[in-house]
Image (cartoon, rainbow, N blue to C red; front, side, top):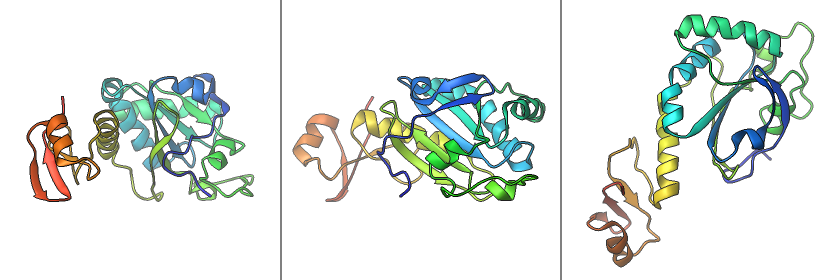
Length: 217
């Protein structure tokens, strides 16, 4: 059984490009994003790590720590970071976990329990290690998504989803399709009209089950 929404994510100790971490302690009281890659020095992943580095100001604004994981070692990670920074023109200010033994990949159900990495391995041997996990300060999984090797992830969508998660968690609302911060939000069906009026003020009733209001401040 894979990790499900609201499961507490696995805790682990691992070596990273910035030293040893204990994952839950590293998260602390922040939101966190764990994003995984099948191997260092691969083309799509290099562009993705660069995109994450370029979004440093957004992660800070949203009170979120980001951490990568790849199945290669710390020395390779440190060498790869040079390529990432050269490509993205941005500082890689986040750690990359060295998951050579696949412990993290298996704990997060990205690989079968019996999986191993053969000598002379290629990215295809760990192709399924290409996921995103958004984790709350309560250490619970809030969102996950997995991509194939050929399709680069849209980190603008990951930022959007993170902001939606933080908004719905803090303000007791839901968000409609394609929502971005500042747009109207949805009042949950479990909230009566009377309670909605008291909590949110004016709102629009499109259907009895679909009511929209301004995003609470």
